[in-house]
Length: 221
Image: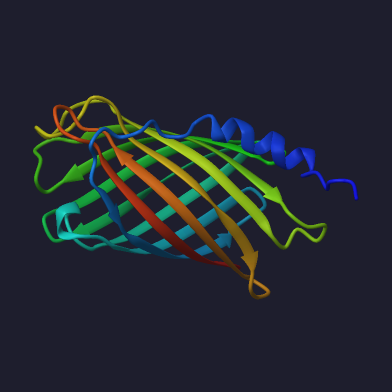
């Protein structure tokens, strides 16, 4: 019997994302976390999308404990494959609180998405704003003809542009790799389950690596 081959568009999409795999962390102690997000997406107009996200991040005390987040985002389409947007977010954990402003540009082509985001992060433990650049590349590959099952593979690089706190690392600070599935479970409700490996780079001490199952429920109206 001839061997069944994987569809070429799936292989082509996964190879570049695979090349972005994280380098091994030297003597790092891995940690297991669990994240959950509830998202409401509103099509405000033909060109505008408003999103509201709530998240719960279950983490160990060594990673500043459990965290709750709220995020509001507005995206505006200025061309067929380009959106510009921005928003604000609030992050709360035991040791500190953060208010975040951000601006972003999103490009799409076929199964590919690229997002560039600039963040201004205001911590109650720092005097000034921490500036961060985030670059994300993602492939969303349909696995069936009806496009009900979608494979998600992504990598995201985060760069600190200044040092607002003594422990901040200039340059590449965090690398995230994600893979998982998205599937509709209702007329306007999607479920997405990802595995994420998050590596935080540190100067003069071992990197921190977290293994995170991440469940997202998204309502679209």
